[in-house]
Amino acid sequence: MNRYIIKFSYDGHNFNGYQKQPKKRTIQGEIEKALRKIENKNVDITASGRTDAGVHALNQVAHFDLEVNIEPDNLKKALNSLIPEDIYIKEVDIINSNFHARYDVKAKEYIYIINQGEYNPLERNYVYQYNKRLDLTEIERALKYLEGNNDFTSFTSLDKEEKDKDCIRLLSQTEIKRDGNKITLVFLGNGFLRYMVRNIVGTLIEVGEGKRKSEDIIDILKQKDRTKAGKTANPEGLYLKNVFY
Image 1 (cartoon, rainbow, N blue to C red):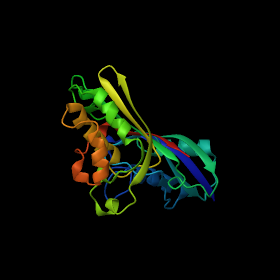
Image 2 (image 1 turned 135 degrees about the vertical axis):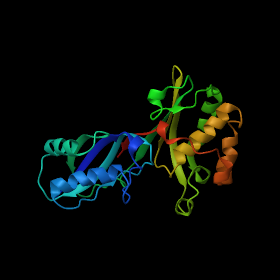
Image 3 (image 1 turned 30 degrees about the vertical axis):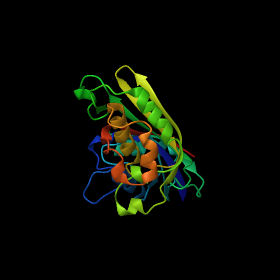
Image 4 (image 1 turned 90 degrees about the vertical axis):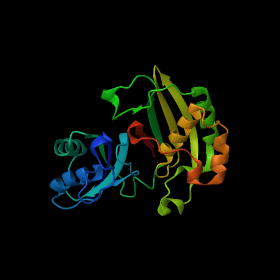
């Protein structure tokens, strides 16, 4: 029995999210379907975390155990020949059996891409088409108020399951990158709650529109109330960029 670690990317547009669901197309479901053909029985994979429908990944990480003995390079080729073209296995390695793709995560990096310029139909599934100018200086100020150890209850899902969690997370670094009409918001932290990045981005857009002030972030965090923050930003601009162990 070997434990394998895989690093993979996916285009989330045509998936109902990462986590497998009955009768729905998911990333986990497609990879497990491929592994079933290799192992000749069901194989459960565990990822660093789930992503929602329409969200993409540049470097997602997962682990699984196989009884069949197969070299990592051969397993990579086999998996890529069996999974659909909107998922790609980038790396495969054998790892210590104590490794856990979810619980051993030290940090994650997410990015969110926004187009402030003219609508681009070719990028509509990969870049949020906001198509108006935002006050980037004010957004940058707002980002800095989010850094550090904070209770992000105001920026998570309203689901009872999420609200009952410990919502304190360390957002160690934020950044705004400019590239012509596109901006990329960068979030590096030790963990992220469901919809957390998209709820933050939705609030930052309101800051950039002048509907809120950057310092309003301080009060929103203190309130610990989802209704005090902005709306949830669209999924297509969000990418899981890196997972760190």
